[in-house]
Length: 535
Image (cartoon, rainbow, N blue to C red; front, top):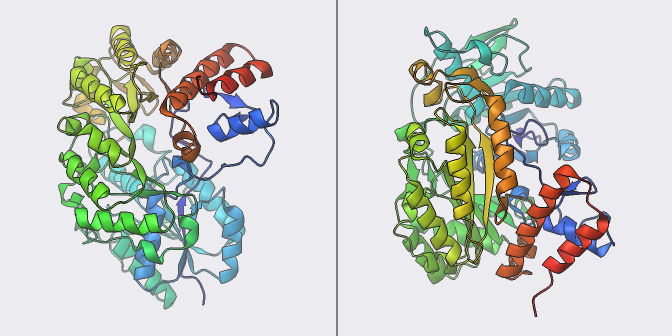
């Protein structure tokens, strides 16, 4: 039976939007715990294969967008297969072509610009020149909204035209774009039409290329009733569970309007999954061998303050998984942190952004450094690790406000507590369709530029990188995030004290490696000591 579609969740290996700090590398490999153990085992060199590589870490989990689309199409009666990261799984993609797929479906959840999408499409065309390619998701929707805004005076789109679709400059060779903020029903209808050899030009919220020009179908502003659509985990292939780590979602949408964020804010899309359904999903994925779960909510269950109820259910149902989530600090004010720990929580991710009250106000964060410090301390006191995002350079930022945030981070490192603080330090980016991108906000702050190249009344993008480097160097009792560490090696094999010593020793070596080449003996002795339990 021919495949109806090959789903591609992410390009993989190209166009990452993350800011990668100077993480320690050994023999050109990022020094994850599994790489370091291999290095020690072989006397100071990395010898493949590295045991534990590619499994049991947050980065190894299949992307939720691909999992969801695969489940949705299978429930719709179609025959589909999933490629999680195209460039890493290209050999598997080529094998799938032997099943004569009718279409390739590209989700753009993790695509940040047209160049990344273009590279992906061109490589697909090299393997399958005539295959029907459909693209949809956040980047396609963002491009469509940018095109609409370009028709209104005063909105800056000139600098963005090379990065976004539909501006007629070297477009990817895609047959059908789905432009809505939701598009699963349109995708299903398109694939059903293709199966029957029927045209797809009558579908709403789509764009086709005809004669080198875009043809836009009727725009319909509606909300497809997918909010109650569950992933049928039990019907998914074993490979999705083989890493031992799974992303899950407990809610959709975000009620907050941070000034730097360009995610779609449509309250019609907001939804919180029932606790009964969430527990059922946890039972299913646990039974299929998953040991670690990352909840992908921007703010766990919209910050409704029911973390205690969730934790009690996990314990009552005897679901033996470890988990992490992102949540706003304010949602943790009423949390029972011991209960949170007992339920399997090993890490909480907080978007703190800044510790300067004026910058937080400019960002529309509605939070205070005092609240941040209290929550971080309570989490780390019970042994839950805390990871934080910080943004430097937002309008109003000065050398003094950067120093205030740096000093704050040093105060919340809490070296005496069991948990460990990690962080990612991002430069401000002028993201199209975010509140700060609006003309009135630009005028207010004297903000000029686009994405990573900007200047405003108090700082420039060139200056901010120097500030970030100085903050990085100043932090001694916390560390950057390493998302590819083997979680079993961290949480099963190491005591909390050992894990903390390991994190901090790795960061000390990474800072040393910036200015000099580390000797093999220094690396060996540092980690041999780190993994040794104190007598």
